[in-house]
Image (cartoon, rainbow, N blue to C red; front, side, top):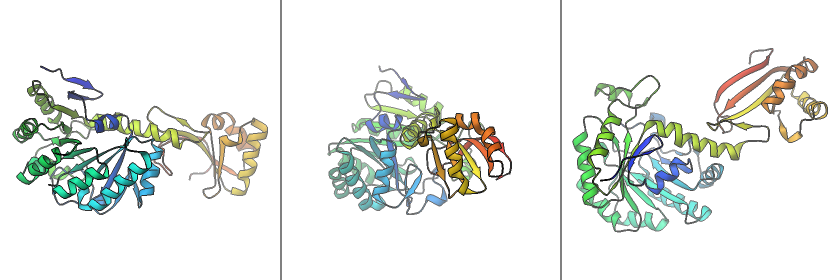
Length: 369
């Protein structure tokens, strides 16, 4: 009998798939290839704004393969997870992106794909030949139809990892058991059980069905994790890998690690990186951007600040610098340029251009911006 292993915030029987292992490092580019899908799963977390033919790479909307490659480089990606919507509604796009990513980063760049469709033999072969390493079937609404079973059977004939990934829906235990039993009987490589989460998109329908969140700070549904733990115990004698992925893992581990990886490539010499992958920096707002050069020269000449530890942004009337420099010399600078400097702030920001600011500490605040 196998032991249930604690893996970060998760639980697992066996070893998580290669795709999951890389996700835990934050090293997978999350490629949202299209928002189109007609599976109509009642628990779908996707917002209405994304249920269109749009492409995103790590939450950033993109328009080309080169954009995806750039984002992959920004997180020093070791692979890509292709999701949607239903990715195979744009099968040609999926094939192009896999091929180009493999060409750019090499055959060891791990690619996995989520699908809720019964994919034809022809398209399974095309995906395999393009370089897809791992395919995860998601039976819509936990209904494992005969056409999906045929697709899974055909996928198993190819040399890649084949598994099933489903949400753990309370009150649907028997459907989940049927899927796990099928996975064992057909020698699939893994089954992933995801904690059911409430989003703005699915809140109303989940509420009508009696599902509620754990607490005010969690998106997870009460009963989902308990059911997952019970299922892991039930199948301790099985040989298949069963991986339970918690809501906390996605937020606290996977996403945080991806931010840290991106921050390391995004950070400027004047930035610091927090343990959550946020950028800490200071900014000086001015009323006259012609004075930014004088402020920068003063920092360099009077306070021995290295030039690369400052950056002028005339478009937005500001100068960026290290937060300690601003904290140490901000008041003195403000006195010297009292008619120009309007605000000096320390901020914590997501590591993206115009990333959301999660913390702002004013050092000097003459005017409200």
